[in-house]
Length: 137
Image 1: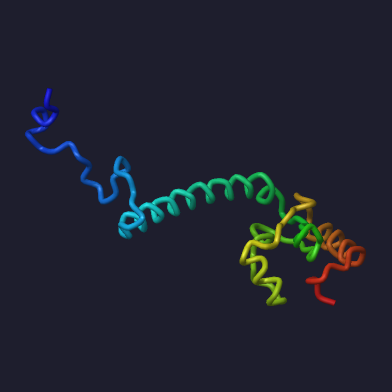
Image 2 (image 1 turned 45 degrees about the horizontal axis):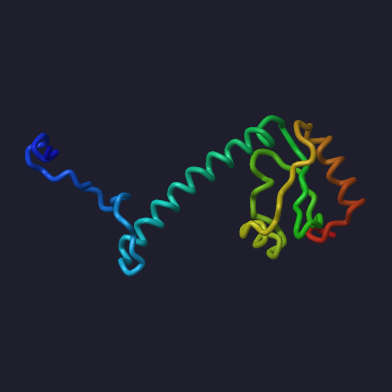
């Protein structure tokens, strides 16, 4: 039976600019760019949901926290923060800022739900003990 008969003789083909049923050709630059544009958008939605879940679990419950920044398995920075400071790249050391911005640094929150005074005490004790390279001398 002809399916076009039931929808007024119109084609049943997709009217979208990118039809997922069609095979993509690397020679067709527009299809290629559109496919990866949609892929990038979908990955950003996924990343934002994972990022939010991480923040809700590890960051947003307490007033202050203390964190480490790791580079190649070595602690290079000890800090204290509130909110999303652990992920911020507004740092006094330009090299450290670039490493955080590029995602080369691995942030790990080591103590959460602290008062301002307690987080400052823990941070200063860890800096004296570990002497990380990106903490100011």
